[in-house]
Length: 203
Figure 1 (cartoon, rainbow, N blue to C red):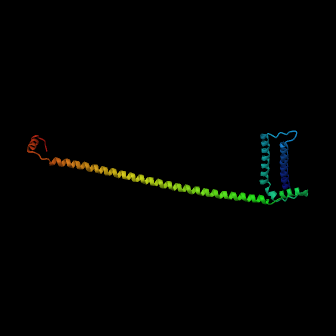
Figure 2 (tube, rainbow, N blue to C red):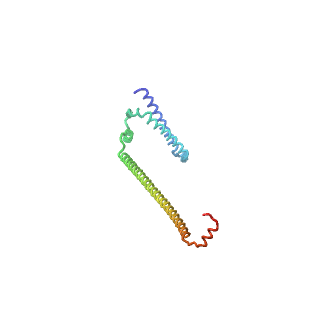
Figure 3 (tube, rainbow, N blue to C red):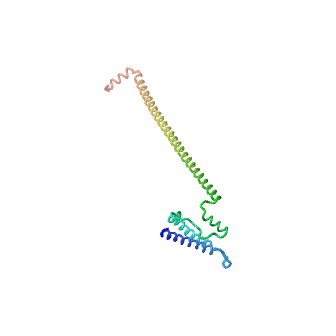
């Protein structure tokens, strides 16, 4: 192993050790004792928890980004044999490369539920798009029908106005014709002719 890897692992070990010590201090401070039976106030406890969460997030990010490639090439081997079945069980859990059966089953159920919800979301999205398309088409068809009705109504109104004007013109023409006909149809007496001739009006 190169010196760079050793330095990197040593840095990671120190960070992990500091976090472990900080956890121990916080646990000790929050544990009621006979001398101090009072529980730590919630704001102070929340503040300490935020500090722990922040340091843990920094360490987790460092492991995931900076040391991931190195740790994948490492093999963890305990320095001493575990004392008793309890420590052996702890060691087997820490070195486990496969999830426990109940956890694995729960994880599969969670992923299946996520997949089902994703498919339902896709179906809902597709239904929403279909409904919107149908609504848009119906609204366009309705607008087209309204415009056609308006055009037909305007056309009928214009035709009615033209017919009314034509009928009015014909009626006026008939009235004029009737007046002229009456004027020429009335008999003229000889006295009227002589009176008109003697009036000196030029014809």
